[in-house]
Length: 295
Image 1 (tube, rainbow, N blue to C red):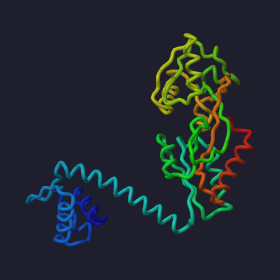
Image 2 (image 1 turned 90 degrees about the vertical axis):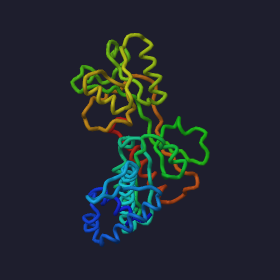
Image 3 (image 1 turned 135 degrees about the vertical axis):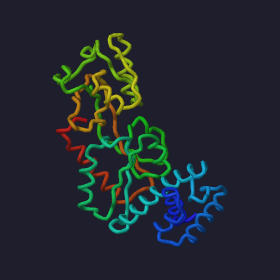
Image 4 (image 1 turned 45 degrees about the vertical axis):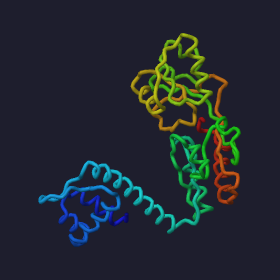
């Protein structure tokens, strides 16, 4: 199967007319028809049903073309990225994050790093699930993680980055937003959003609050759903500071508890590139000097 055959197939699925599709692809109709027939022989089923009026997709063909269209877009992006990389960069460092805001200084770190290493590309990859699995398969060079999730994993180096605390998230006009610090008793009588893949430390705090019997709670599927519920006035929630996008949409008030999160970066033990070490140093320095942004 060639990329030309894939493009011909997608175009015929769009036009359902051999003559028009051939014209759009700038080839003769016999050549076009021959390539479609070769493709069908290779895959072993009819993609199109022919008739005097043109062509129509078979049920199997419809499913096949949907897959081909997605594959073709992926291939196009891969080629474009390769062209960009080959034109400017000699090396690449990829970093896996669960959410964009997990490392709030990442854009600034990328800018500073580029001043000294202009030919090394930093590529963020947002892997909401299976980030650790991808990292261990060498799909990424750096992984943002919680320290508790990195214990007893061979072949990696763990770099401490920052400590993140727990915050109460509420609407900006909520009375709790006026407080400098929120205690457990402050949210008695309120509805707390819980669940959504909360880290162990946060689950412990949520369980402690629920066990008082003095709050209502509502299970939420994930952090984005939780924020939507908070915005809709359905309740408040607790979250790690590293999820704060600092957009000002919500009030993030420090919550009075001992639990916190040790945020780390993981690298592969055998990756000793000077550029990688330099990028880690830039990130660590930014967090070491951070004073104004709550984490």
